[in-house]
Each structure stands twice: as structure tokens, then as C-alpha cells.
Amino acid sequence: MADNGSGTETETRTETQTETQTETQTGTGTGTFTVLNHIAGVDRPAASGATMELVDPATGAVHGLAPRSGRADTDAACTAAAAAYAHWSTTTPAVRQRALLGIADAIEQHADALVAAEAGDTGKPARRFRTDELPAIVDTVRFFAGAARNLPGLAAAEYTEGRTSVLRREPVGVCAQITPWNYPLMMAVWKIAPAIAAGNTTVLKPADTTPSSSALLARIAAAHLPPGVLNVVCGDRDTGRALTAHPEVALIAVTGSVRAGRQIAAAAAADLKRVHLELGGNAPVLVHDDVDIEATAAALAAVAYYNAGQDCTAPTRLLVDRRVHDAFLAAFAAEAGTLRAGAPDEPDADFGPLNNATQLASVRALLDRLPRRAEIVTGGACLARPGFFHEPTVVAGVRQGGEIVQEEIFGPVVTVQSFEDEAEALHLANGVRHGLAASVWTTDHDRAMRATRALHTGIVWVNTHGTTVSEMPHGGVRHSGYGSDLSMAGLLDYTQVKHVML
Image 1 (tube, one colour):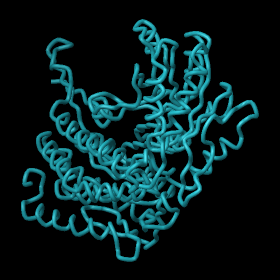
Image 2 (cartoon, helix red, strand yellow):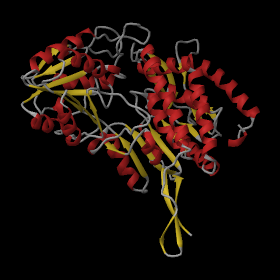
Image 3 (tube, rainbow, N blue to C red):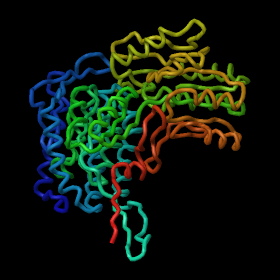
Image 4 (cartoon, rainbow, N blue to C red):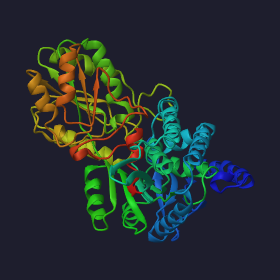
């Protein structure tokens, strides 16, 4: 691709290397594989040689190794990104579009390897990832490829006599991006695609338990990007701290917990770095008395336990009109009881294990600390098998101030509360610190519209829940962070405005 500094010969060589490296990452013949950093277009281990063990959530056994990167590695990645920025930031949107379209095609071509990498690190059902997530990932890359050529802005005009004002949208610089373990590849693309489309360069640090698909994506993308535009460094929290503190970094984008968001925002303030935070969620669901109880229960159960409930927009707090509370609770619990947890290769698995032992322990602790008045209607236990599996669980009899209501569960656990009227429903829905997503279920159009105005969240669904599209923003308020992923808003978050007066 001569337009972005890579000749045809280089592109062909890199593609061949990608195929070979994919085989290396998938297996070593010893039951484990080795993930490598990708810095300045080259795959490499940590400079110190330090590694981390990767644990298969479906078995609890070590199945791979990844670099435990230190300051030398983050410095090399940020230096490479800064050097690449000098050229990449001056490329035309058409060049960046072609690169992203090439990456989207390559993701489809390497689907089998990406499915294996993602399912291995997360434990999620391989078929669900292939059919539900991978097409959306490709669509996101293609959306931002088009968005790169459609930046909005004011027309040139004279706001004072004799002078013309023009607005320029320019890239920010080197972006440090940190992604979580619940949707490793999808969250990597949500970060990488808009940053690159806007002309930035990036250093991505995936979660320490799920680096495989992100490292593989960097290899795949290397055939379409100049060295240094996309870098991946694997590691732990210390790696993340070194990355976000690097002086070359202009913007930090994080998807993670509220605690992580606070720490990064505080650290970024010391150097006045821009921060983009997509943090936790604790989504309320308002179920009114005019719904089809069975259909609504089935729809919500399918979303609530998807990915073992490890989703910041998962419908975790069901708020139900008292007149249909008991009937809905019974229907929802029955639906939850039909769902099955299983390993990636089990064709009838509806969801997989929790990602790691720490998260399983966190979910168990919340259930173990339930007050006596709370009732576990169904589930409530770990599965008697290796790995980090937990039953789909429904908890009733909880109160608004309870820990399990106020805290993000991030597991296959849903609470059910009743409300007296519309005002109480909205009060309960807004009565937590998070503000990412909510949904309203009713046949009353006016009631639905009142709720969409009154709910303090960045996303509101009506008679559906959890669907995202590349064209619409994804972001929250309050403790769910600030800034948007997806959409033109997500692209603009990776730009800065310059006023030029002539």
C-alpha cells in the first residue's frame, strides 16, 4: 500500500508472517502458547524476559504465557507511536480508510484464529463469539473507515469584518488505550478504530488475563498499517501505570472499573492528559404491568446472562410493577433455570465461565453477604466442574440500599425489586452511582418517553436491551464515566479543534 508508506513487497511479506505467527500463538505442541508484544511492527517478548501465566477459565489450568511488560517496553511502544505519528497524522482520510477496510477484511480472513484466541482466554462459547461478536467487530472497523472521510464542522465564515474563520479537526497524538477482559477483541476495536481513523497512533494494553486476540489483531493489522501506528504491550497494572504516565501520551482511553477510572483520571491530571472513560454499569430495567410477562422474561434472561453477565450494560436490576411482580419473578426465574453454562466447544452452552478466579470470588462474596431477608430464587452456587463456572442466579427480596443493588455485580446474578408506581420506579432506577444504560418495558408510548427523559443514563432502550450499533454513541454519566465509544461522537473524541483565522 504505497499511499501509507508500505510498498507491495512489504505488504506481502507481512501477510505471510501473520499466517506463521498465528500458528505459533495457537499452540506450541506442549499445551500452551506464547503471546508477544507488537511494537514498531515487530513481535517481541518483554525486554526483561518476564512473563505472566494465562489461565483457561473453562478449566482453571494454565494454557499460555504473555509478556509482563515493564517501563522499557512501554517506552519503546510510545516512542514508536510518536515516530509513526509524524507521518500517519498527515495522511489523507482516504489512506486511513483503505487501511481500515483492509484490516476489516483481514479480520474476516483470520476468523478461525481470532475465535480460538478469544474463546481460549475468556472461556466464552466459540459459536456465540463467531456469530454474535465477530460480525459486529468487523462492522465497527468498516464504520470508522467511512467516518474518517466525513468529519463534521462549520463552514468557513466571517464573524468579524475582514477576517474569515475556519475550524480544523486534527488528531490528538499518541493514545494509550486500556481494555477489559469481558470483550477483549471488541473493546480493542472500539478503541483502535476511531483513534487510527482520526490520524492518531496507539499503544494498547489488553487486560492481563485476555491479551491473545488483541496481540493477534496487531499482527493481522501490520499488513495494512505502517510500523508504530498500532502497538500492543501486554502486562499487569504496573504496565498500565507506566504506559499512562509516559510523556508521549496525549490521551488515555480506558474501559474498566470505577476504581481504575478514578486512578487513571488522577494520574492523568498531573500531566493534563485527556481522558476518555467507559466504566462500570448497574443497569436498571423498568417492567410495567402492561407487558407480555412470558415474552419479556425470556427476552431479558437471554440478555442478562449473556457472557455470564460480564457486561457493563447487562440488565442486572429488574424493577417490576408490584401487580405483576410475583408472576414475572416466577417466569424470569424459570427462564434463567433453562440456561446452561459450558466450555467454548460445548455446542449447547448459553454462556461460559467467569473470566478469572478473582471475579468468581467477588460474585460469591456478594451472594454470601446477602441479608436474611433476601431470597435466592434460583441458582446461587458454583458449578461442580473445573473452571470458574457459576449458575444463573436470581435474587429477590433485596432493598435499594443493599450492597448487591448498589454495586456492579459483573456476573450471572440478577436482582428483582418491586415498585408501587412510575415515580418510584424512576427513583429506584436512578438510585445508584452508575449511569450507563437502562431499559423500559411497556406498551404505553407516553410512559416510555417520560422514562427516557427521566433516566440518568447514557443509553436507554425501550422494549429491548443490549443492542448496540456502530452509528450510535455508547457511553455513560456519573460513575460510568465520560466520553463516547462508537459513532461520530466516538471519532470526534479522538480529535482536537483548531481555529484558523485568515
